[in-house]
Length: 300
Picture 1 (cartoon, rainbow, N blue to C red):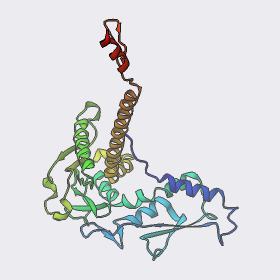
Picture 2: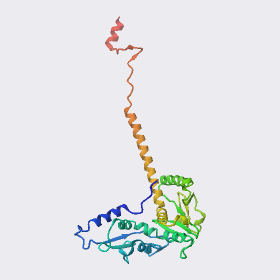
Picture 3: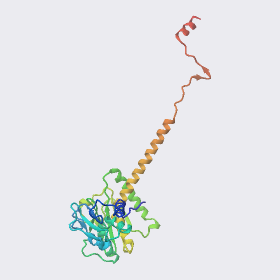
Picture 4: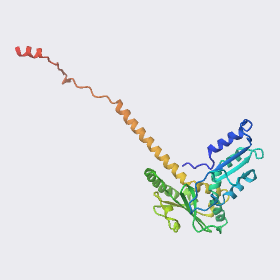
């Protein structure tokens, strides 16, 4: 199974092209200045956000990018966040641009990092509620129940297409079964249920409509220690996209197999030849008689 990359390949390629052609950008007033604006969907009432940004997003940006970036306040019209970078003061190497292309991970994963950092120290952030909602897609959220020794993460899985719903349900059941393999003993425990788990008691009813069931992970301190933190944050924040990718891939694979099967059947039918009409019986040939031949035979 494929794991999604944390950075946007398109954004990274755009930034690399811009950095490599600074001397050629003669049409720009100041080619060393770069403005990167990020647009986020409006957070629902149950999600924790400040000024349209997830909890801890500003602090996460400052920690990740240091002093080489400036956060414009207010951002450009129509955007939730705007970063300003001056290439004359910061060397635009590939490592820096890769971090910049990971802006979505930094912003959307900020609340998770706050919760998991407290989990690593076996504490709970005092500003958090018992049930924390985090938006990961427009009008969709997943939930966390932070505790000192563990964090429970629950995903309501929704799909618009009925075929996607069936495939996703089957995929998630197999996903949970795969977790039971001996090689995955150290992975977070995972469960699937058609109804909302008990941990989501008190969540708004409209957020608990899930036609593909609920997936629940239990994260322990060992899963967020050291370098594991960033990986755990990214895997959880993109879990729904991860499932959607494999569902669409499976659907496309089945369509391809069906098309190939139909093409092979059509090819077999085209190659088939109709049997020639038999013109002989018991090695005897027959001759079609005309009207004159019939009259001549009767006269005899």
